[in-house]
Length: 200
Length: 200
DNA sequence: CTCGTTCCGATGCGGTCGCATCGAATCATG
DNA sequence: CATGATTCGATGCGACCGCATCGGAACGAG
Image (cartoon, rainbow over all chains, first blue to last red; front, side, top):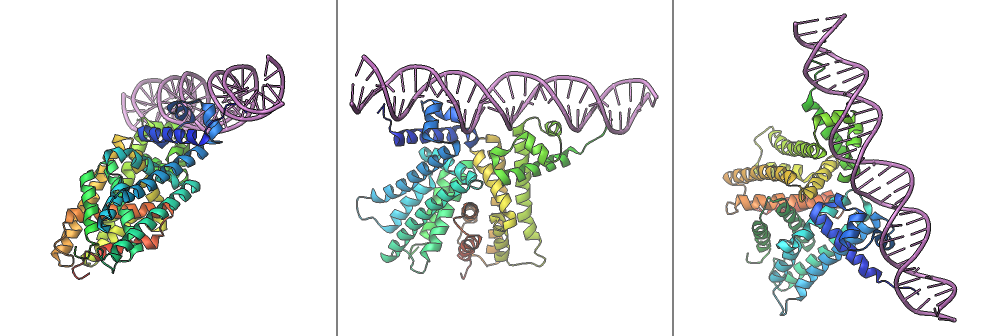
């Protein structure tokens, strides 16, 4: 056997380059050549990892979807003590809103893929799956909060989860465009969350 | 003087072609040649109207922004009788949510521009202006509803407007991707609106 | 070392891109 | 009609695109 290569690792490396390029110049600036240069590999190596450009973009989206999901879960589990459901919800939504400047790039890439998904069924399928997981996570959190008595029991967790997820995404988009500041978005999100509290 | 041309009309015609192309194949499929063909004019004519491609895209965004704003206002003024503020709000948000299948194309184009705006300051500026106008419209509607006593007076119109606008956009995006049905999005929107009623 | 396999990087190809150029057509004016 | 300003449509240019190809480097097995 000749020199063996960790393809999975290289794919991730390439996905990172795709993210960086989208952040810097938008999705239409993603070319195989630029991706290869950004990932410090040759074009041939990129083509060895992905048969086509679409395959590469698909993997990049799966990669970023995994990141978003992981971060949301991480912020939940990072709570060392049994936190209140309200705190967990707040942290989770903040993570999803990507309001931190360091997450801005990721939000930008996410938005680019959402826009592109309107044309590509494959990308749309990945997004649907990710949205589904985030939805389930929020449903669970809301149900948990209702069990502990923190959240109003009359709310339908599914509807509330849909609303929260959409609100979060909408706020993020408007922050990216510059219509809202991260602070005002954060405040709108918290204000809505407060409405879910039993004594809010 | 030689044959005179209605440039403004032609520009609109070209903008329509841009919309159609984005709807059909996404923003990166928009080339001068295809736009010219779709608009049934020659490439030279397109170049006479717009110095560069970016100028063309900018105009297309301004055109669609105007359409979105016009439609929102139209649905308000179309209410022949002095409608209730709640009805006006519901109609306005439905218009913005672009949940009707016929509006789906427009929502798709809007999303494409939002994504692209993260890279182009010029486009972002147009979007900010449009968002600002929509925000002001919602603020006015909410204030009107509070005056008539239909809406809870404790809510801050500005914050509520921000929330409603973001929620609407987020729901639209998720409908486009296929994570939500237009019906569930409409329901989530109405459910939130009910929370603003005095006796909701 | 030799061989066989695997991977890399360079190059080529056909196509499309945005943009510039230019002759022909058009039409009010003198 | 002749003129000159103006617009059109076609063509050319240089660059870049995605993808295919291929010689050779790298490296384990015999």
